[in-house]
Each structure stands twice: as C-alpha cells, then as structure tokens.
Image (cartoon, rainbow, N blue to C red; front, side, top):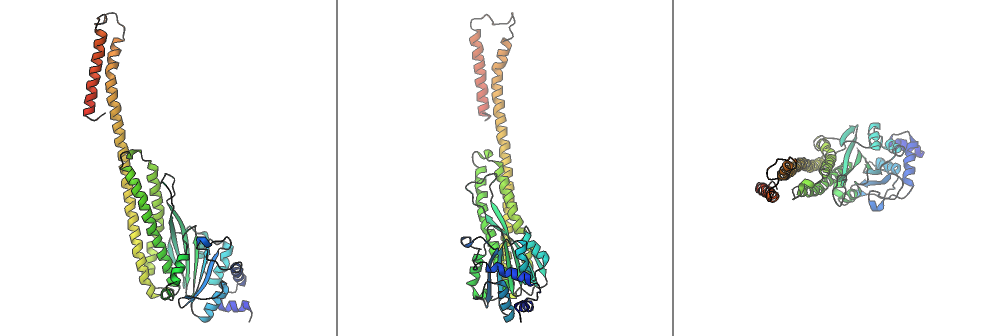
Amino acid sequence: MSRAAQLRRVTGLGRVAGLRRVARLTRRRARVDLSHPARSPLGSSVVNCVTYRDGVRTAASGDPVEAVRQVRRSGEGFVWLGLHEPADEEFTGVAELFDLHPLAVEDAVEAHQRPKLERYGETLFAVFKTVCYAEHEELTATSEVVDTGEIMVFLGPDFVVTVRHGRHGSLGPVREDLESDRQQLALGPSAVLHAIADHVVDDYLRVIDAVQLDIDHVESDVFAEHGARVDPGRIYQLKRELLELKRAVVPLDRPLEELATRPARVIAPDIQAYFRDVADHLQRAKEQIASFDELINSILQAHLAQVTVAQNEDMRKITAWAAIVAVPTMVCGVYGMNFDHMPELRWRYGYGLVLGVISVACLLLYRAFRRSRWL
C-alpha cells in the first residue's frame, strides 16, 4: 500500500497535499523548542512535535504526519504539536491533519479572541489570554504595564495542538514540568490542557502582585506632602492597564467552570478536580483585580480632592495679599487725585503719617491672615 493510502486510512483524510505541506514544515530543521527564548531561531512556526505514551516522551520523529500515524496505529499515547503565530497557509495542513473545525482554525490564525471554550464534535477548542508584566523604571502616563498574548489549544482524543501568539507565554516550562510528572502526563491530552490553564492563571497572580507594587507607589505619592502635584495621567494609565488585565482574567471564569463540572470525552474524570483548583486561583485573581479597581478609583478621587484643596489654598493666599495691597492702593488713590483743597497736603508730617498708617494697617491685616492660616 502506498504512503498516501496509508495516510488516508490513518487520518481519515484524502487531502494529501496538506499533509505533505506539514511534513515539509517539520523537516526544514531539527526539532527545537522555540517556547524557550534562549532557543528560538527564526524560521518555521512549528515549535515542537512530541509523542507521549504512558506519560513518557517517546523517541519518535518530529514529523507530525508520522507521529499521528504511529499513535493511531498503536491506539496508545498522544501527539503534542506546538506552533507560534502560524500563517494561514502553514496552518492549513495542520487543520487537515487533525480535522480541525474551520471556525476554530480561523480564530487560531487571526487571534485577538476572548477567553472561551468551544466544542466541535470530539475536539475542544480553548482560548487563553496570557499576560506579562512590562518592566519599567518609573510609571509614567505612557508606561506599558501589562502586555497580553494568546494561547489557543485544540484538544482531541489523541492530540494536543497549541498555537501561541505574542512575545511571552512560553510553554517550554509547562512541557518540562509535565514530563517530570509521569503519572499526571499519563492521563492524556487533558493533563496538558490543565497544565496550560494552571500556568496561565499563575501568571495572572504574578502580574497582579507586580501591579500592586505600582499601585502602592502611586498611592504613596498621592498622599505625600506634595500629592496634588502628581501627574493624574499616571493614575489613568494604571487604570487602563488594569482594565486590560481584567479583560484577560474575568472571561476565563466560565470556561474553567465548564471544564471542572461538565463531562467531556477528551477530559479525564480525574483531571476535573484539578480544573476546580485552577478556578479557585482564578477567583482569587478576579477578587484582587476588583479590589485594585476600587482602590485606584479612591486614589483618583483623593487626588482630585487634593487638587481642589490646593486650589482653594492658593485662592485664599491670593485673596489675602489682595486685601493687604488694597490698603496702600486706596490711600494712594485718594491722595493721587491732585485736588487743590485736600487736608494735610501742606502739613510737614503728612507724608510720614500716611506711610505709617499704611504700614500699620498692612501689618495688622497680615497678622490677622496668618492667624487664620490664609497665609
């Protein structure tokens, strides 16, 4: 039997051209785990293709077509194919190889999706928003605090296809942790889905802890001695970045609840309890984000109140000095009218008396305003 006929029997697909396209992609170079930044050479979007059997990584070739053929011929194990920002033409062969639904394929290639979980026959399609804290020396009105990406997961009875978008969200550590836990990995593809979900939610908590430091720093600046001089753009920028984090975290609640409670053929029953644990961690992240949102609103209101108080103090100072200056202005205005018949104009001590009256009046006003804390 020809190779093409064998592939049709193994995969149930007749479009051999797409399968050959996948094979060419994986033969361009030796399999390298691009999920590690230190091991990310430029080139094909295929990150890695690994076969697992009984929780152990096998020595099978990195050719997805051959890996799928071996798994389905033996009826044991599963294939984990990882990709990073694949182009439409690159992902076409993968979609044909694993019989992925066209709508899910479109979402995986285009990205910019909300966290969700969809079912297409025996295949699950999950979308996770990944987040990363953007390091910065000082928070400004234009600082990027949270950087987001996406991980799409196609889950079948004998395969896992992960598609990653963004500069972060590496799955290399996830793969290494799973391979060190043979018992967990032996539960099948659903163990990979749980590990990815747990990794994503843990990143949420780490980013939230880092954002809290920025919030604490802004709060201390606002309530410092010169808090009214704080740039309000910093507070608004922090609120915008928190909203970006909220968009990644909050919509994931429903998919995790569904994974933890609703049975599915591709989800091992023993894994559902682990999804409940991830959902608990996500709930903690949601509560912290909600509290941060309220805290930032309070900080902003406090800052606006401080600005108002500072403006009132400035107006009182201006009013006090205007009242003091009004005394000499009034006296000088009266004696500057140059009428011929005005009292004390020809008096020897008139000039000194007027200056003395002006000085005493200004001094009394100054002391009065100082006592009332207008100056």
